[in-house]
Amino acid sequence: MFRKIGVISILIGMSAALYAQQAAANKAASSSPSKTNATPAWMKKMWPNLPAEQNPAAVARGKGLFESNCSFCHGTDATGGNGGPDLIRSVLVNHDVKGNLIGPTVHNGRPGKGMPAFNNFSDAQINDLVAFLHQTNRNDRVRFNYKILNVDVGNAAAGKVYFQAHCAQCHSSTGDLAGIAKKYDPGALQQLWLDPAPVMKADGTLPPKTVTVVLPSGKKLSGTLQHTDEFDVAFYDANGYHSVPIESGMSVIVYNPLAPHQQLLRHLTDTDMHDVTTYLETLK
Ligand code: HEC
Ligand code: HEC
Image (cartoon, rainbow, N blue to C red; front, side):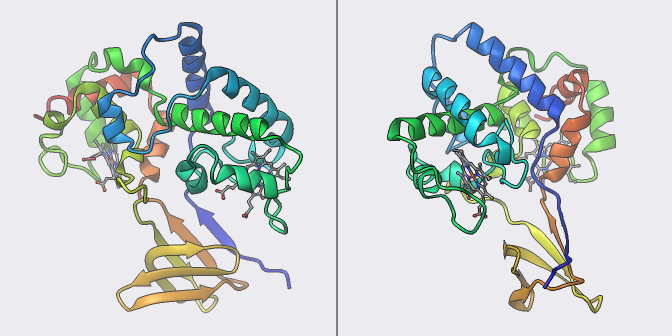
């Protein structure tokens, strides 16, 4: 039976322009390699499971392998594409330690789910792919690093105006963000509001998502998403746990509470970014 379902997922995503910026930043970083590769303490605090810097040669080899074998489905930057999921925001990739999860997935594939087996790949090739995925994931998360040296060079008054127009519907300078500048240095503060990833808890779990299910009858149910795939959607609401089979004529709308941040970034100019950080720095 052909299932016609509407699934609107406000996914974690970034604009092509930001990736281009990141690519430029990475290029600049690789042409003038920094002497210290160690992850600074504040970064470790913000991203407890941030992958380590990978060996650049392995990353380069992995990139080549990825482009010729995987990008067709997963996209050249591994953020998903023609049928293959985003591997940068993948829970599996994020929880992988030295290939323990990615390795078997690539080697055995997921028969019947569209992921072919690459059982002709050597361990060394798999390690290179793993290095590429972890480095891309790391670069993606710390993509604004290169601006840290001059973060609070903006105009606080302009930043306040921007904040009131774009942030105040969810945040308050005297409420949840009061004193935020006491907790973070300017670099960390900028990272924090640009990239909501830090709200991932120390145990690696993600903040809960909210789901609204509209049944064919028009009845709406909303709750905290537990799981969804092409067959079922499971969530909790005040009445407890529900697992609803997905059927024709039904909509499943998943809200990602952090999506507004990613959407903001699409329109954010460098000036806005500096102004907002400079303004947030005044919240002491
Ligand atoms: C023909 C398309 C296709 C190709 C080529 C492909 N994949 Fe996949 N891949 C998929 C699909 C579809 C899934 C999701 C399967 C599922 O629903 O469980 C997937 C899943 C994965 C996952 C698990 C992601 C997760 O979050 O569960 C990893 C890791 C992965 N692929 C890596 C690779 C790598 C590395 C290559 C290249 C060596 C590759 N894939 C090539 C289609 C593809
Ligand atoms: C539609 C709602 C929404 C908008 C608009 C929004 N945010 Fe957020 N923001 C969130 C959510 C949700 C979080 C996750 C943490 C939480 O639940 O407070 C968050 C987290 C943050 C944090 C981290 C707070 C902490 O203590 O860890 C900062 C700082 C922040 N946002 C600043 C901003 C700024 C600056 C803007 C405007 C440029 C903005 N946000 C726009 C919803 C929003």
